[in-house]
Length: 452
Image (cartoon, rainbow, N blue to C red; front, side, top):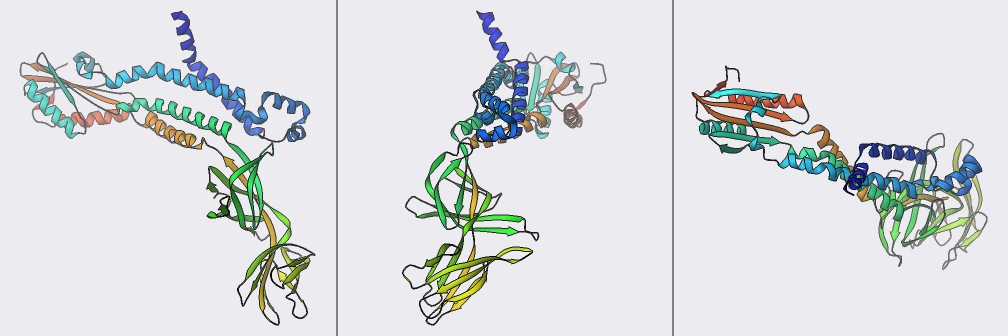
């Protein structure tokens, strides 16, 4: 039974299992990148044919990152990481916390970095002198004495041995965050016409309506074009409203500057030209103002006032320009109606018998927003931060250890200095030389001229 248990444990702790699952995850991720995810079934038939489309559906490749087999591989890799950590961490912990003051002198003499010195001072005074020099050099030595022999030990970067395990934890956090996002999050889209609001979005692929617990209004959409007429920038002025239509916040968003609210992120992704036009009318005297969504060819009343208006015709401003011009009919019940041309987004002052009116008109747009809900994103962010920290620790920091053994001899004391580093041997050699040179500068400590 114990043998069977060890066999199972060894399987989950094996590096081969880690490599196997990593290769499978890498291949699956490539497939998931090449094959569009969460699209309607007819899109896969159209792009890949009915045979591949059925295979995609059978293997959940069209919803791969939430499929049972992909999550199983993630779980297997996570178990492998956990078992590897449990299997190897105790030994690393022992190295970090071991009693290094019991190290024998002959072991110091066999270290790659070692030096033998002689001092005219007795053991205790020589130990105090070396300890002071080590402290001045940035080391924090411990000291022990036994049978007339003193041992000093100091280390730096002991916790750097935990760098790989920080990376392990970061990977697990990223996996947990990704799984939470896959299971409880979604991606959706919506279009909001200017001066309109929505309280639901539509999930990608299924087009399922997802209700919101707030409303989102598009106050204005601005499209900037290059000289050749191609779109340059989309900008939407958005306002969040509670369910009682009270304004909560407003923000202007562009492609790389989304709106975050209520656990959702709204990205500017596209736009649509509407068949209607936005017309704004202001009474110059009373400052009364109202905006209308007006289709062409219809007479529109301003309720509560004698004003009526309509867009008679729409034309392009020039053969090389996409800017529109509007032929506007306007009446306030006094005298003959006014008929005039108005450029898109321009304003006109219409003088009537009893009042003047400021009128503007523009193409009405619907802003296209991509909506994401990812409750696990903070796990991913924290995991990525920990991964950077863990990789930095694992690759750029090292565990450096220095021992000093001081034993009595006929003319004073013999000092043996030894050091080790688990990484960056060249850098440690320089640090070791700096310390030993500091010790040798003491006039009562000299290099041993005899062979150790």
